[in-house]
Length: 323
Image (cartoon, rainbow, N blue to C red):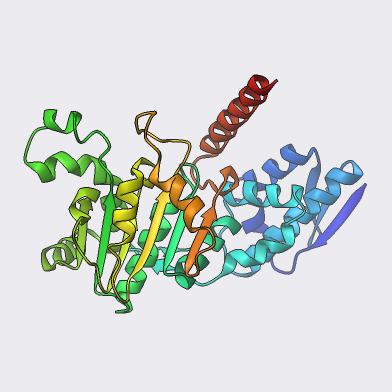
């Protein structure tokens, strides 16, 4: 079977194919088809169903390309997944407004439909809980939204926090004062802020008190007004810590809580505050709960495969135990 797709501009074909035809080769390999470019149109040849799916994926990529999006391997793989699940029509949702511009001038956008739902929830709700595996952009997108709100003067302060799980044991062996001891736990938050603001601007706001990066224990007894507060690695909070954190919120503040419930480092007899919060708060007005999946992973493709392999392994094992 053959399907023909008209190409309006040469630049679109170049964008779709990639510098060394790597994008189109990926589509050919995934669907078992052959794609050729002749007389201003792409011709897709292969078995009927595979050809139809490949054509849908290419049309979706053309939609992205026509809206100025750069097409790379990550985008191609994601669009292939959309085509296979019959959601290729939703690809237009990914060309939404830029969340924030980094210090180097790079626009930060949601790269998957799950990420877009997460960002929309952050903008709409007072509290958003984002749950998902590593590499889904939970922390990075939350920091981008915080920096955008700060730049627009919607809030006066950005507060980033996460629990230091081994605070009772391992911190004592690290060199330096308390701040030096907790810095390794907060490094991913620093990295995201450096990316958005640049090191100099970050330092300036830190000295002025507009930015605070601190372990969760520092939040106790405070009321945080006019702030954008991000709690990262929330799966490692106890139920008491989570309740304490949630009740710190003051007027004109926004809270984002991120975590991965498959990576809990708490002792076996302790309930994760994040797991409990999801159950307790799921129907509370003003609170959005977003679940991201391996489909939303925007790191190396191997990260996606590793997460899926672990999920399949644990699902199969739990089914075996139930038998």
